[in-house]
Amino acid sequence: MKLRTITIPDLHGKEYWKEINPDGYDKIIFLGDYMDAAYRNISDIKFGDGLNDRVMVDAKRGRTHAELMYNLNEIINFKEKYTDKVILLIGNHELPYIYYLRNNSLYRSVMCSGHRYTIAPQVSMMINDNFDKFQAMYQIKNVLWSHAGLTQEAYNTYFKSRIGDRFDILTEEINKLFILNDLDLHRVPDLRGGYHKHGSITWADRREWNAETYKLPFMQIVGHTPCADITYLYEDGTMTNDILDKNPIVIFTDILDRKVKFFEYEIEV
Image (cartoon, rainbow, N blue to C red; front, side, top):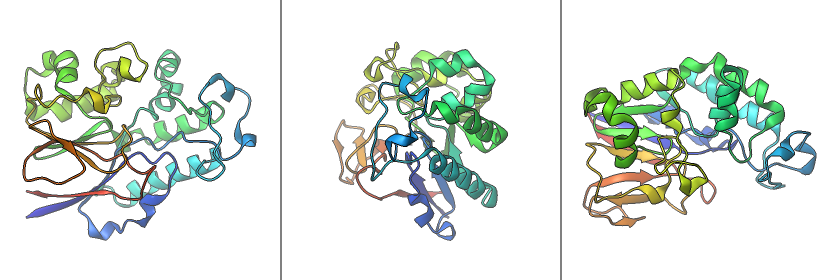
């Protein structure tokens, strides 16, 4: 039996996901980053937003506060309608909103570019009221989904000592850490302006992946790092947009700024 999956990468308010026919798939996996985007117009920038020095104004592709919140609410409703079929993962752009009501010091430490200060209370309430619908990692057989992926180096640094290479419990333990607000899930690498050598599963940059050192027994499907097209890193170190007759380590799918295209993958179960 083959399980048909479709992966929806970083939306940042875009409604492209509504073009998907849910009857055509066994699993519909959102990779997070539902929030934060270029502003629709200057009037959307209210007092407090100026604290973010990367506020953007884009009259064509931008999103108003209301549009971002409405889209997120629609995604949550979609999850409620297709409870077992739809998987909602968390991206780095949701973390500040999660922590806004839970832990204000964490809220400040995980803030991202484009963060909407003025609607943080409402978005935080929306996500936290539906917290049980979100998770950090999803797994089918030897395939892992997370927002940015788990590199070998991040695994060795943050998680190896916790599970002792018990890969059969990796996803379960990662999701427990998400519930416990463990910051090891959200370490920001210096490549992304952080203070850590290795980015964790909501922050790892594509440049951190090293095929030579990668030994984890999983193929991973991730978003986070924008690409011009779906990109494959193969076990021999080849990185290309082409599907080759060899095993990929990780598949990068964050392309919605360039084209409307989702990654479809069938898994033998």
